[in-house]
Image (cartoon, rainbow, N blue to C red; front, side, top):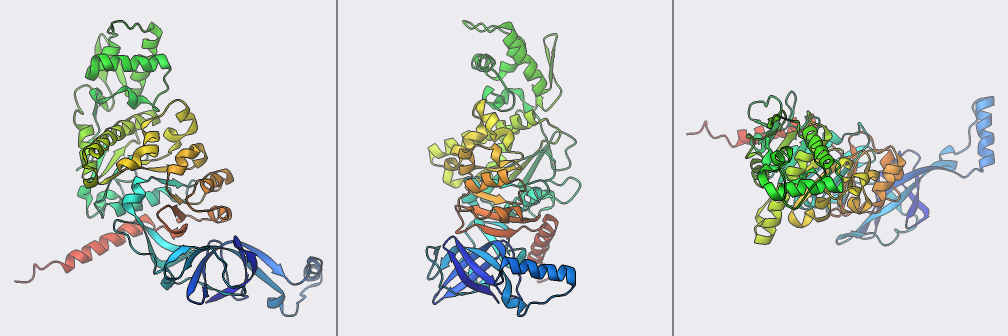
Length: 508
């Protein structure tokens, strides 16, 4: 279907006159055919055009408003709409970045499924949704190369209510269908497992889901208890603020007393040749008691939270083992303060990262699945103010994780709070609707593809609509994300149909 015709412009702004009986939307994909090649273009702005001068247009408008109906001869010819297009790809024998203009006066048509035959399903697919042209959902599935995308970090920026949780639920459900990745999910709203509604517990491969919660674990889940001996001073970075003397105090007690360093600190055991001020030790004790939910009275340590002196010896090693087997591990942090959530996440992440660094040195890394850590409200650990106080494990992952197949999925409403060097390391960005211009600008400036003309397009994204920009795609791909309930139920139906086809129990 012809949408319009090229009438002017330059390489960054091709102007198309829109056919009178056609509607064109922001973000719509179009095609121009020249000889044996095709140009794929995208609409990034819409304006009015007229052959009548502005002064006469105002006069005609006045006649219409004040005197009644006033018609212009050949209205469809004199007044029209113009669409501004940006070239995305040039498709000949193979697809390549567009570096030339289509022929002047070329006819522009809407894109079809056949125009996208160059997009193939990768070896380790990660399904994100259907291709979208404007607000129209096309019958064309969009897959990314899962192993590469997850190990090179993913950023999901969006305003409130634009579908971040729905997207994350779909991604986790999809990953359970494959064996190339393990996921550590810090879940501050306890929404992904689905205690009381549809969730990962309902997946046909639910045996690949491990769920840890501090409160009334359901059947098949585990109670979250972590032994105090597993804590190290570096795990507290980002969870609580410490001065240099306080930090030195933690490290000194750990070096001296190893696994029992926390109890030794509370007992104020002396360390030879090192004398810490009384106030320093008192402040450190107070901060640890508050953070770890402990009491220390009459030389007795009382554990009231998830951290314990006797229980939880194997919790961290079991979680790491599940991740190495390609499972999804969900940690219910809905009962925790932000500091404890960061502490628990940092503890597990540090352990798995150290293991994968060892596998890299010993040549075993290629046989291991990718590990991805899901962080809600990422600026809490990756924000500029947090990192000014010192680096943490999540910052280290963002810079070095890809070399060891450990990545991040960072979810945030405020990408501008994250430093530019970390944003640049997030090689895939799944951009949902962002209302604030400053936040859109932070994403546009750090995207793998040129999104300088997509400011309005991103602002106009509705709930469930997204723009995927990645070093693993040829262009910024507009997608429609499925509703999780519909997506999960459809997947379950397909699984059941496939099992019925393979059921030979009625045959002798």
